[in-house]
Length: 382
Image (tube, rainbow, N blue to C red):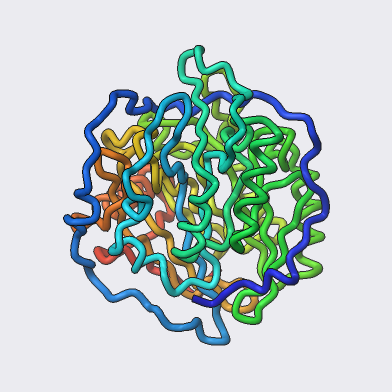
């Protein structure tokens, strides 16, 4: 895997000591003491369709692979961790994560031993997740090099847990994204790239403040060829599959207007928008020649996230861009979460079928076409 030029990484400002209590995940946790199984290591599915590209990217493109929400089990308030860490990411899934210049995910847990949560988990639908700090190495070994932290679980254990998570990820070479006023600069395949993370909370870069977002984006464009936007936005669960050009609410909380924000970012010069947070896949739009993935769904939720119906549908989104940020190719690699929330390569291509359906529902005039292999039909015109 091509490694990022992390020596060039810097941020323009980080989060202060204040924090707020975000509403918890709106999908039910698997709270029962399920019997542990090693099936994930003995029953891996065979790789479907094509062999993934394990070679370095050519000099005229970069390859971004992106996944959605990641929770590798929790040891709070009770113990829900796998017997063996490697069970969390089976070999078949790891194969499809290879070959990327940037491998991105949305990390929704805390890598800390801090004992005190900042949330009142006695309230309905409010959860706090805490994973062992050693788990950072698992994700580094797989190849992740950027994790978003601008979400409603990064502060589950307050500023201590937040800083521990950031420190533990960066210690193994995983850059963290989404800090207040931060622009993450990196070099991917010798091409300067900037990434900016947004959420619905003011402690991070907020999707509610479009002018501030545009100012950050303008600064990023001065220093990078390609600008990638991460957005944690939208309502949650199987009732939130569709993208609408309106403000979404979840348990009374303003979860932003995903379409308005994403299109404003593209209008202002962004080259790719990666959405996460609804815990289900959403439609993929090509707007002015640029991809907007409105939600990548759940990617890993070991005994923490629901896997019922579409909450178990997942993907690895692969996008190739040229040095100017123009879209070269893209595809949806279908993943399905088993009952324990472990990702498996999906031989049935269920996520591909779902995204095709949602594309036609949400963008009926010009829906993005996806073939049976999950490849997006990319037109040269913008």
